[in-house]
Structures are given as C-alpha cells and as structure tokens.
Length: 361
Image 1 (tube, rainbow, N blue to C red):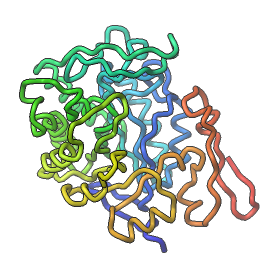
Image 2 (cartoon, rainbow, N blue to C red):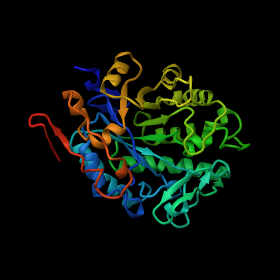
Image 3 (cartoon, one colour):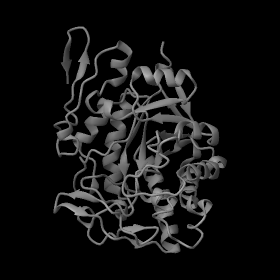
Image 4 (cartoon, rainbow, N blue to C red):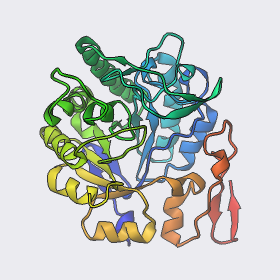
C-alpha cells in the first residue's frame, strides 16, 4: 500500500489517509456570506480525503473582501456550515475550516454595509479585484488598526474558532499567506507600525502568534493548524527577508504545539520552504503545491512531510483518493467556471467508474 493511503494523526485530528484537500475560494456562498446547498454537496462529494480544509472563511464582517465568500460570525452562518460538516462526517470524513481575514485585500462592494477595511497600516494594496456590483475595482484604502482594534481582531479569530467547533468542524486553519491580514502584519512592506506589532521581525509575527495562541486556548492546540508560504507576493506583498520572517513565525509558535503547518512551495528562487519548515517547525507538515500522486508518494516516503494537499486536482476529481488508489485517469477542470455562481463547474464533476469506464454523479 502506498504511504498516501496510510492513516495519520495530526494533533487531535485523525485522518484516514494522507491526502488532504487544500482550501480553495470558489465564490459560491449566498447572501449574508452563507454556505448554500451546492457547498454542502461539493464537500460531501470529497469526503474521502484524509482531511478537507474548507475554503477561506471570514471571522468577521470586516474580514470579508471578495464576492460570494463565506463567513462564520453569525448564528445563521454557523447553522449553514453545520449542514456541510454533517454531510462530510456522515461519509466518515474529517474537516477543518480555514479562517481568512483579507485585511486590505478588499472592496466595500463585497462587504456588508458599514464594515470597514482594515490593515496594520493605512497602505492600499496596489491590486484590483472583482465585484458583482461594479466589476473590477481597485482595493479600498484601509484603516490602520489601533492597538485596541488589534486585540479586538484577535478576539474575533478566537470566537470564530469556537464558532467553527459549534458548526461541527474538527478544527481550524489560520490563513497566513496570499497577502491577507496575518501576512500584512508579517511583511515589512505592508507593516509600517512603530508599536509592539511592527518594526522587528519578532514584533511583526506577534499578531499571528497571538491569534494562534488565542485559538489554541479556545479549542485546543491539537485542533489548530496554520498555512504559510514564505515570500508569496500575491496581493502586493513585499518582505525584505521572507525566509527570516518564516523562521521567526515557526520559532514563535513552537511552544503552542499546534496540530500542523500547511506549508506551500515558495516562489522565491533559492528559498526551499519545505526544508525551512522541517528545520524550524516542530509541527507535522502538510506539503502543498504542484504535486501529483507519484510525486506526493515520493515526498512522503522521503520524510519531507506527513501529508500532501491537492487543490487543482480536487476541482474536477471529487473522488481523487479512489482515482489515485486505482491508477485511474484524472479529469481536467473548466477554468471558466472556477468562480461563477451555481453548480456548474463546481458540484457537477462526476466520479469515475472503473468497471464500466463510465462516470457517475
């Protein structure tokens, strides 16, 4: 049996195999940032993954910024997510929720009325994003968080972790890359603060450390993971020394004994994010980006990580685990329906039937 299909324990999370479904924004949430019936079916279909990391979800109204993305700060949202987790658990799956506060990577057109756009410093991200109301727009200029605001946002994350558990999630993952709020704090280019959360690299990782600590206290460290990609420039992020920042974060959170670190390949030439994580993190590693079944097996057999996550392959292959086990061909996805509303290109990709060489929904 390939190591991919062996069971694995990450903290308090028991995985049936080492194949992880990576979080992917798919823009299918309804009004009031609510998961709908298509999302229930989408995750239910993929429950054979050892672990599903559900898509980036806002811990607060100000954490929203893209169109049709979900949140988990209201009772109605908690109840809607419960339908998703029930569907996954009924098929024997394990699922955690990625908490994603977009910070300055936001437009007011994609937020509830009155919800502010916030960031470590009042620096607009030099990028554009899509809105249903106005098409492509510049991101908003954010309000700089005061110290009181910083502590409030940390508490919003803590409450979101509790809400996720109430909704039936087995744990949470903190999104610390892609130019969202945690990375905005960590990167020297987007953080120009002069208080305890800015300046030195130890200060710049303090916000992320305190968020992870608050969530670990709330729901148990064995149910908390985090995602990192050193040097990811997405959403106008610049960092003078991304390797040093990544090491500082790993060092700062080591005493928490978190369930895992979801580590992505770095786009920075010469920066081996996997090797850096193995050297400086004491958490089990979930490796991400660019793997197929064979390369994932080789990486795990070489001891590079504990599990491997797949994103693109999970779009059109809801039964990815079974296809890899059988050596069945993988389907390709339609790029035109990645972020469009409805079931098309989302929950309508069929499973593979080896015996008849046909597909079945």
